[in-house]
Image (cartoon, rainbow, N blue to C red):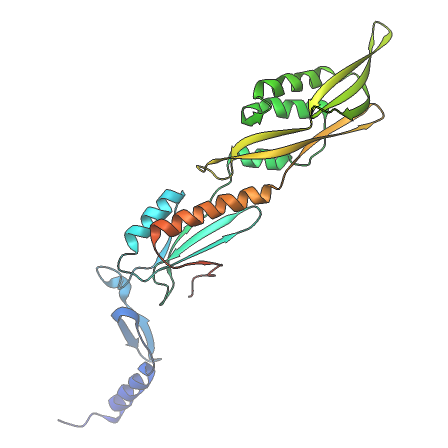
Length: 268
């Protein structure tokens, strides 16, 4: 075999050095270009990718589970989940021991009802605005009955021109508000009973089960005017339970190692 010209021999030697220590996953096709001897993938010119990669987003928990099960039979995958007081997320990484760039993500969306009640939580309102909110969202209320709460809200709205004098807690669990109003030039006193607590039955996440969430009804009287609001009782525990139920369902059905934590960005 004839000796190669010095220039060609040098090119071959340079190409060999350029390829040293380079490992291509699953035989990804590549070329080494001159004059810089850069190694470039030509995978995109083939009929199909050399390996599966990318990120898919599931719209609900059932889709997340079914996709994970159907794509994890012959792939070594891992599950990750995170949760906070207001959000949660799930990830299935199908090529976890290797590139970690083939993933399925599900981020549960808070329900409309959950956003409404938590959005109003702790906010002071005048009696009219508070009554309107209660009446608009009465179908969510489970105790007292929604009909009773609508009646209370309408009574509050009707008393928008009175002066509230005081409030006391009764032995039956109700709160009694005393007010004065002018009727034909005469001051008349009246009383209005409102519950000390009530409860709503709402889903935390879209498509999830309903939870009973307790709320304490609050008020403050200042110069005859009353401010009203409610405080939800430990709503973070409700979120925690909702997330744990999803974690248990995913773990039971997907059958992959599961970890609490954020895997981070896809490596590039």
